[in-house]
Structures are given as C-alpha cells and as structure tokens.
Length: 88
Image (tube, one colour):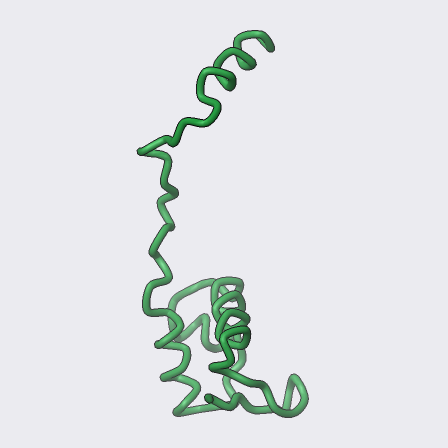
C-alpha cells in the first residue's frame, strides 16, 4: 500500500492539478469592506459582534481584521474592552 501511495505521489510530482481548488476560495470577497463599513458606524464593535452581523465565523472576521491592520487600513486604539477602531 505504501508503495502504491509513493508511486502516485511520484507520478504527480511537479504537476499542477486544475480541479484542486478549495470550495471556500473567494468566499471572503467583500468581507473587509463590510467590516470597514460597520466600524465606520460603530468603532466599538468586537470581532464577535462583527461576526454575528456579517454571518461569518469569528475566526474569519479576526483574520480579515488582522489583514486590514497589516495593510495599514485599520488601527486599534485603547484597551481590548474599552478601545475603539480607527480607520485610516
């Protein structure tokens, strides 16, 4: 069985699989802009609250917030509980 797996992997080595795209690719399109719109109206929203508003998981919202921060578009000022989001 291991030899069979090895042979399959060896035969596919270096080949690009055309139909091997995850089902969630592109699922977050527009999420960042929606996050920014909600935060413009209420800069005190938490990731958990945003997730409920956007019907996304908290992890998805946290990932998008991290990416917005890395891009310099979003900044957190103050403490975790009492702070606010600043949009640049």
